[in-house]
Image 1 (cartoon, rainbow, N blue to C red):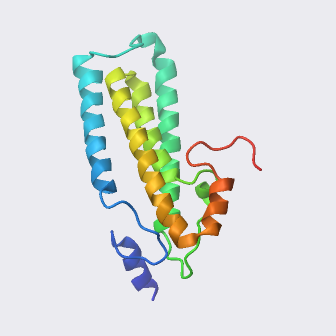
Image 2 (cartoon, rainbow, N blue to C red):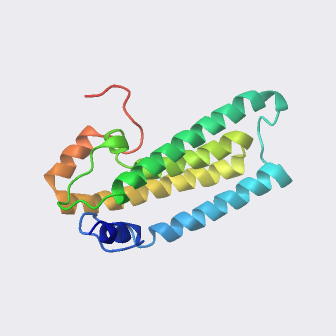
Amino acid sequence: MKEENKKSRLKYGAKREDLAGENKLGDLVQLLLFLIFLTVWILDSFFLKYSIIAASPNLLFIKIPLGIGILFIAGYLAKSGLGIVFGQIREKPRVIREGVFSLVRHPIYLGAILLYLGLLVFSLSVLAAIIWVIIIVFYIHISRYEEKLLLEKFGSDYEEYVKEVPMFIPRLKRK
């Protein structure tokens, strides 16, 4: 039985009753945005240097540790969120409130947004920053879509969760 559970967890896109679902184009758009961002960021940061601000080597001692710190947080949020959602099959479907889901409702998407920000900090490319803003708008849109699915599936329990936990920006003070 354990081996069967493990296989079903590893199977990408498997229909799971304990999950509410996601936008059908979400993964494709995320991949496209990632490729566009990476292309613009690499070209602008390392070759064209068209819109780089604060390129002074004196700022490296600030930009490198800050960028690495943001990337570390991004990785933690994404890995923890994915582990909680896909690391176990919940026999009785429920709203996930533990771990990073107690801080923000969409820690995996927040991790992705912070990944881009971490890369941006290294070069401060204005062109890549414009793509990053588009990516944030996309994640807000897809989060709202998925929240409609979660409201349909979990009703008032999810409504309560929405009131208690912010979408992306953690509260400094707990209620």
